Image 1 (spheres, rainbow, N blue to C red):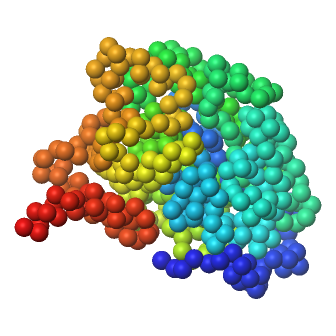
Image 2 (image 1 turned 45 degrees about the vertical axis):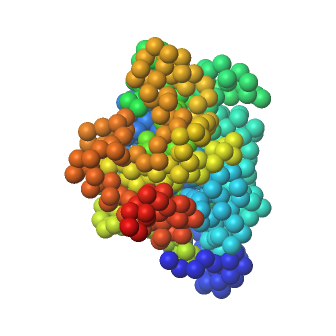
Length: 494
């Protein structure tokens, strides 16, 4: 792992590159804004709290996300893609630095450290025009990103108006063409973040100046995720969530239509992703697979083969950082955790992608709940550093109808009561066999069967090795609590 570059060193090195900063050094662009010799445009479209298996092309309802499904049919979809952390600002900060939160400074809603290079540094040195739509405050320090266009959620119908996204995107596309520059646009739909469409909480938003989704779902036509009990209130909230997800899809459709209209689609890398899983109990703000799995799609004309689905490789949204540095013709900074996934785009293979590690540090209320997760095709292993039998977990995924419905049902349903109690207190270790238990309902960490015990031991070793490799400050606590706890030390000493 290379040493981190300071921002000054990075920008100085970039300025010395043959095609570095300065309009005179930029390639000649055609009237359409594209050039065979120049770097491609980049459109990174994110949704807020969209589950990894919600889009139809990822196993969700067939009629939920027509625009996302169309994009997947035109590019490559990664079915084992994850964000490194399942909460908004840290997830986005990790993607634009290529580093885990404990290595970039944004473990919660904090700014990225000044010594950590960001994607905008690399792209700016290559002459890119940059823009961001919504979520401006979730990439900080804001001045470091130096967006050429930044539009907050208030001017985008609380981040829920497809037409306003299209209007602002069109303005950036037109400017890129007029200035003969490639662009990087990060368009961030606020949907399907709470408050969901049609919910009582939606009435409390500062403004309701945005349209309804193009398709509204009802409770009797949705399926409840398998990690939640099937209660009427949860069905109602899942329907509201799906309606919000449809409006996010409407927004993607509107932005892509403007890209086509501008004549820029043939030279634009389009990336679609969600920042984390759904904002329900046992999903967002945790480290389960359904917490961090993201519906990642990349459409890169001339590079990706239409309609290909990668169901084998575990990839991270941190891998986008080196991929885009390479695409832009820039130098990837040292010290990143992401790994260039370009070879996978055209159907190639990469070793070392049979598992990945995810993290969690703190909630949006700045409550600390350190967790680590190790995921592969069969097993999920979780370490809850905060679980001591007394500390009670509380996060934004417990707002709204679903958690309250679970608490109410716990009074008469022992199974629901067990789920409620476990969610609040957890246990230091969790292990799930996803082949037999895809919704991670049965913790096997105390199971003594040889196969399970071997799986637990292997994942403990893997997590400890990852902690060493990334300099995780929680490693000593992990070793003291799990690898070599006091009782074991005493036994060894005797």
